Image (spheres, rainbow, N blue to C red):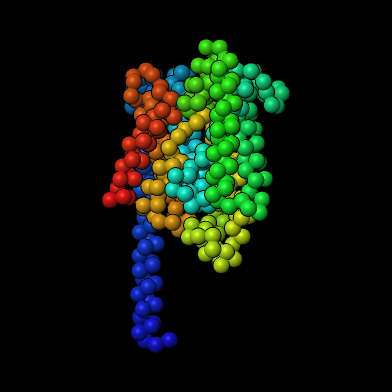
Length: 350
C-alpha cells in the first residue's frame, strides 16, 4: 500500500471512529433522562405525598402502609411499565420501518392492534374467552391470542413466492379493515356499559399493570430484543435495499418474515396488557434515525430508549394535566405525537 493510500485509510478510520463515538455518546444522556423520568413518575399522582413521604416510602423507612402500597404497589409498576412498553414499541417501530422500508410503518401497521381490539371486544361485550378459566386475564388473553392470530396469518402470507414488502403492507391493511369492521359490529350490539369499557380499553392505560404483568412484558421484550440483536447486520443491510442485502448473502424473505413475527409478538404483548398506545412506535424511530442514522447497532438502541422516554413522559403528563384525574395514556401520546410528528416531517422537508 502506498503512503498516500495509507494516509487516506487512517483518515477514514479516524472519521469513522469519530462518528461511532458521537453515536455512543447519545445513548448515555437518554438513559439519564429515562432514570429521571422514572423518579418524577413516582412523585406524581392523585395521592398527594410530599417529597419526604415519597422518599421514605421508596426507601421503606416509613410505617405508613398506605403510602408504601401507593408507591410500590401502584406507582412503581406504572413507572417501570411505561419504560418497558415504550422501549418495546420503539423497537417494534424501528424494525417495521427497516424491513418494510416505509417511514410510516409502526408496530400497528399490519393490523395487529385492530386484531387485539377485536379480542378485547369479544371478551368485554360477548364475555367469551378463547382460553377458559383465565379469570381477570380474560381481556388480556383474548387480545393477545387475536394479535398472534393476525401475526400467524401474516407469517403464512409472507411465505408465498409473490409476497414482497408492498404486498405485505396491502395484506396488513386488508386485515386492519377486517378486524376493525368486526369490532364495530360488536360495538353496534353492545350495551352502554360494555361499550364504555371497550372504548376506555382502546384508549390505552398502564394503571392496571401489576408486578406480575410487568414481569411478563419485560421477559418478552428482552427476548425479542435479543433476537433483533442477533440479526443486526442483516437488518442494516436490508435498510439499503433488498438487492443490496441479497448481494451480501442475506435471505431477505426469511429475515423479513421472522422479524415481522417477532415484532408481532412484541406488539401483542404490549397491546394486550396496556391497550392501544399510538405514535410512540412511529415517532421514536424517526428521532433515533435523525440522531444515529440507519446502522442498527445504534438505531435499534436509540429507538428503544427514545420510545421508553416518550412513554414515561406521557405517563407523567397523563397524571399531571388534570389534578386528581388520570387521563388515558393513549390519548396523551396522540396529543403529543401528532404535532411532534408534523414538526419532524416539516423539518425533514426543509
